Image 1: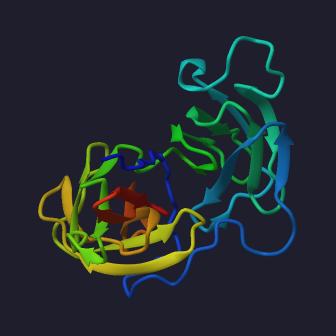
Image 2: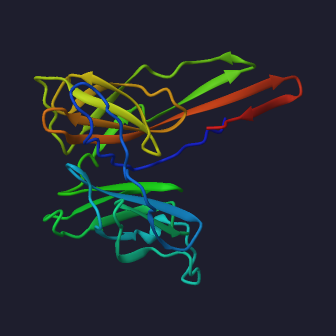
Length: 256
C-alpha cells in the first residue's frame, strides 16, 4: 500500500505564547504585501522575527544544496539555487520562487539596527516550503516528534486505527526546564494556531505533547513561558486514506 509522505523543516517563533496558553500567531501581521523574488513553480516562504515581534526590513539571502533539488543541468533558468540579500519589507516576509524546491535550503538575515546578531535557519522544504529566521540564531532546529506522521485509514467506511493522542518530542540542541510546565502549541503550515497545552518535560531532552488532529502538516512548538524562548519546533503530518475493497479490486483515495 502506498502512502504519501511529506517532509518539512520548519521553525515557528511562538513569541506570543504565554503561560496561560496560545494567544494566536501571525508571522507577518499588519497590512501590506509580501516581498517576492525569483521565478519558478516552487515557493519558499521566509519570515523574519524579533523576540518582540516582526523583524522588519531584514536583508535575507539564501542558498540550496543542488544535490537535494530536482534541477537538471544548468539550462533551467528558473532553477535558481541561491539569491543575494533581499530586503523583506515591513511585513518581514519574503517569498522566493524557484524550481529548486523541494530541496535543502539555508537562509540568513544580516545584522542590522533591529538585530545586532543577525540570524539563520536551514532545513528540507517541500513546495510550498517555509523557513523562519529568528534574531540571534535558529532555535529548535534539532527537534523531532515521534511518531513524525500517522495515516488514518478507513476500509469500506470502517476506521482501522485512530491517531496517537500524544507524541514524544525530543530535543538535541536545547535543554528543557523540568521544574515548571512549558507551553506546547501546534499550528497549520500557514501558521494558523490550532491549539496549545501546558506540559512539564519528563527530562531535559524530552516532553510529551498532544497529537494534532488536523489533517496535513502540523507544526509543533515548545516554548518556555517565563522567557518566551522557543526551545524546539518540529513537523508532524497526519494523513487520511479511504480504501474501498471489493470483488473487482481495491481503490484508494488519500486526500491528505
